[in-house]
Amino acid sequence: MRAAVLAALCVTACRGAAPPEALDGYLGGLAGADEANRRDAIADWKLDRAAWERVTTDPYRAAYADYARAFAVAAPALVARLAHAGTVTVRAHHAEDPRLTRGQARARWAQPIQAASQIADVDGAPIDAVFVRDGGHWRVIVGVDAIIHDRAAALDPACAAVLDAVVPGRCADAAWVVAEAALRDDRPRFDHACALAANLCR
Image 1 (cartoon, rainbow, N blue to C red):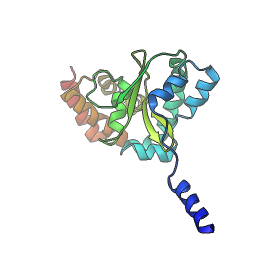
Image 2 (spheres, rainbow, N blue to C red):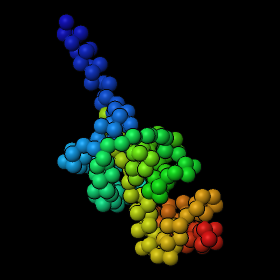
Image 3 (cartoon, one colour):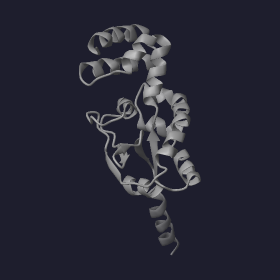
Image 4 (cartoon, helix red, strand yellow):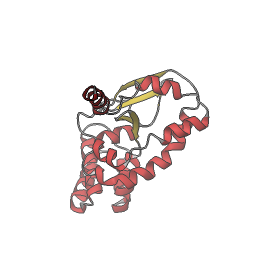
């Protein structure tokens, strides 16, 4: 009997946290909720440091403090974005998606290539965040565009301005190198990539 009880407990414990509700259903239930509930739910979207390091890659893993500040800035807009109920649509987060916001596009740079992240719209307009599963919860990546801009601007404001006007193709490839070099504080590589971006992103 005791063995059977222990086995049952092990099954429950070893399964870990239950997977989160499907994102469209979760957001559909949250959109239009009262402000206090939306604010509390969205506060829970913040990744902790360990989770941030799991869902990102170098050199973004070391930028958790920047992410935490960016999340604090982004949270009120997310609360407001979900103030009204609407039709929620969800899709996989792919780098080549032409409908990505700048923040969503930059977040793709911060993740592993095959990361199973998702993005969502309400009534056809984007929620400017990238949703990732963290155990039994939904969390978000936000602010990667701001993190990159601030790091680049600290080294060269003109180059940071080029990043803000990136277009797909070779320009985006050069901008990716600019971002990585800025986050690594690799000034020679950053200067070289900025020179390439200045030519390719006209």
